[in-house]
Length: 251
Image (cartoon, rainbow, N blue to C red):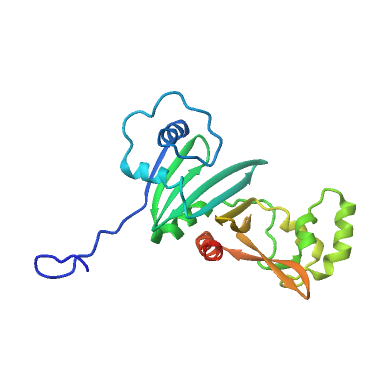
């Protein structure tokens, strides 16, 4: 029953917003050690206890990493000027909240996110600058699994053999040359993989980033053959993918 104001009207509960804080990695490790909470990266025993008393929401966020119902790991690699920048996020769902950890350098972002905000939180993870000098591939492509895996092989003879064997099955708007499509697909400026697990059940989604945006890799069986559909996708769709995977892996 909703709470009532003195005049008898229903009082809406305050909207709970995500809580986040960026902290030095060593401080997070010391606090997790004090709470006996495992972290998703190797930790050497920090020297001394954490300074002061942490805020209650921070303690709750870290403790949720010890016994989650659903585990989500997201790994984003952005290639810029021949260097790769990694952004990693770990989300742990229990009840109606998600505890989050994220790293992109020396600091760690710790968060506690209400379930209704999870999709927006995932969009933050997938929102990265996708700057590429090479032209992007066609917006929608379907190709044999073998070409996606090995079409970028450094040996031109191997690439030629693969294209001769599987190139006729490459599908893209306007029917561009199969070799050109495969070459462009193998020049992404970013990669994203999200892995969801609950107990022994696991699912994942993989994206490639180009100068004009993200593409999702979707396994397809065409005429009894394993192919991959490469389709346009946006940061806000990561929450859709994760929700589908959570529904698949949860008991």
